Image (cartoon, rainbow, N blue to C red):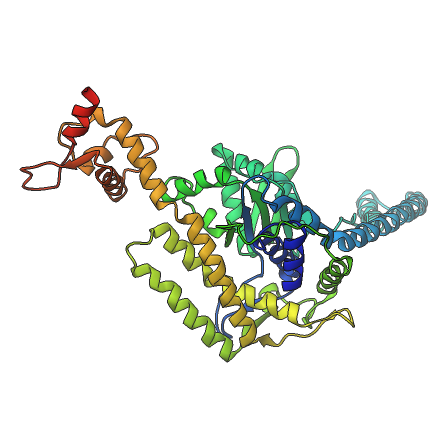
Length: 482
């Protein structure tokens, strides 16, 4: 994985994050429901190794070319799936013809039998015989089930299409989006609320959902496992992050479920000398994907999905618990936004996911083209997962660290409408205005007022015995008048 990330980063002159995010998401998607991880043997928490990732960068940063090239990893899987599907369709059509001819023969034979007994039976017995023979026709004329094409990725972000695809692909699928805009557009309006609910159910891998439509009837899907990878620009995603931080309707946990949000803070160390990715490296990753796809990890076919799990080893569990105590300590930090605190708590499942993925990749035998058996997740994989989780957390902090931006945006909004406030006003006076775009939470308003105070726009009013009141700085007013 290191070699792949380094090679793509050098070839496309982009930060390594832009190669790491799609690679990680793609491998997790291929594993899918084949194997899960549990922190402990007696734990009810069963975790599938799917990731929701977004590479965030300005136009020309190199995120899209890397992403498009990495789609080649799925080429052998897609080619084999298409070949198997075409063979299955041929068998299906042949079987349909055989069944049709058999049905004609059976129907003719039954009509002859009915004619022969027509004169010998009374009406009641005749009706019973006809029903019996009719059931025999039905039994012999059952049509074979039409095969479905196995899918590994889709770029369809619509609600109905995604639900249909997940219903047919029980190992899960990767929603691979070149741009996040269409996905965000689908989340708007009344239908968007239903779509958001559907996506939340797809995150764990064990959700169930049905859609009732007049033209297609009821479409049902269970154990839906969705991986998501997309690229976008900061101007597309950041407004929605801000709305989440403000506590708007977007704060339903959807954006917090994107456990990989990568926005490189600097590109100073990115090489400017482009090259080519080694063909042998592409082939090696393709072999890994094919081997994972063939592997059953030693589980019986009739075993329940949640029983297809391995646990962290005792040492790995110790590493995991120590890291999780550090993460949960953020809950007592008042300087950290509560939305970001809740986002970090969802990292509870991230480290086991990463550790399982590293364990699977480490067990791959390139010479034999097989993925070895996995009894448990090792301490080494857990330590790697913790290091990567800390790396991802630093990026998430950068993405979610728009608190100052949110406070500044709120302060600008208040400043634009400050003439609608009394000469001396409180945070509650502003919150009660219920202005569009401004949260009615007085804590949010107070932070915005702090921004205005630091800019010397407002100051604390004098002679306020009870709650703190504010007033527009008279020097600002005088300067404006002059």
